[in-house]
Image (cartoon, rainbow, N blue to C red; front, side, top):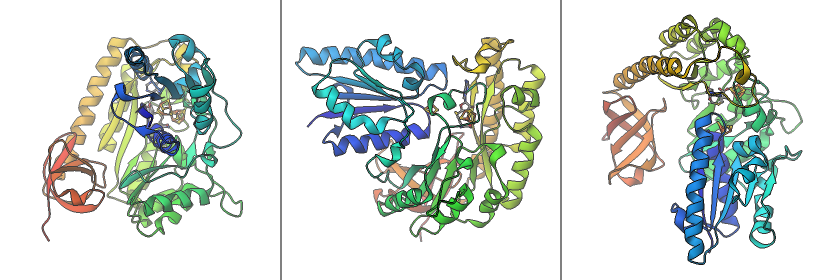
Length: 444
Ligand code: SAH
Ligand code: SF4
Ligand code: F3S
């Protein structure tokens, strides 16, 4: 049996895609290994969002080439494939830059993998590159998605039409498309039948979902959430990532009415400065954003928010940066992701004047993260002493320990029987740090 090794970079969409690629390979008779040296087929599912992510890929590829040479001395062949957003952005350059990649597929063509693999394994020596934006949807050609355990991702929307001036996603994932309602419901039911208790709906701009129902009528995310709510056995629903300007009243109502919808929402603002938001081509300013947060809180006072931030966008002044800090103080995020602006080739911001010095970006990131981490730690510490329902997802570092998540996406570990894996269990929180909680099972 041939073995494959797969490494995933980037966002949750890539994690979902890799899971489906793995299912496809299993169906073809391959077996997964976590040891690079044992792999006859090595696959990297890549991310192009910031320069660092791309650099990491090329250093991993270099390491893999050495392993390929070592294996060749033992008479074993190793095939190397690259999937995902770097492929879409670099196209044929990826094979030229490395010289040893056997095939490369963009994020919208990986359903063609079985055909391409057969060719690579048997017929051709030239690298095969496929970066078409196909007319067919990959979802129609993939084997059924399988449960990823207690928590599963489910992609409902892909691509983005927003064209934020710093971002590569509209170029790598193409225009926004939504999967039909019934396809999503069918996949959700398969996941739940396979043991999934929590579904996280995915899309680059998930709340602009507009899939067709069985009668060809366009439906929005709120409709879909209500339909998912009816699935018996499904306990938790999340969706990510939302674009603030696309949050509508119906979606806000869902946070009031749908009990299965978890009280945690990732709603990226990127910057608190209106001038920077405009230069970023975001369709919201800071007061509109804060208004949406206020309306969501009115619908559900227990909601906790997270966000993405970019510091050092071209032209960002100290006052602009201060505006970002002010938003953080107003919203008091319970979690957040923050990045230094990274110049991406081909995006409008890359050629904007007044690029911010690396030193200033670094300083601002430290100041912002100190503040964000402070709120996150305080939120986690406020959980100590409470009893929270935890969905245990994996085994912990120590034996006898399981790791799971609270409704607020906090990581929590506890010494509990492994029978609790993929179950929701009441846990009393004993201690908390910035990154995780620990607790004990509540005796009944
Ligand atoms: N579709 C989502 C997330 C896209 S990428 C959204 O719109 O929110 C995830 C995050 O990466 C973005 O929210 C942004 O904060 C960050 N990001 C994107 N391009 C970047 C760049 N060029 N430099 C630094 N961070 C970037
Ligand atoms: Fe990128 Fe903006 Fe689209 Fe998010 S909304 S994927 S940041 S272009
Ligand atoms: Fe990266 Fe592509 Fe996701 S660029 S963040 S893997 S959509």
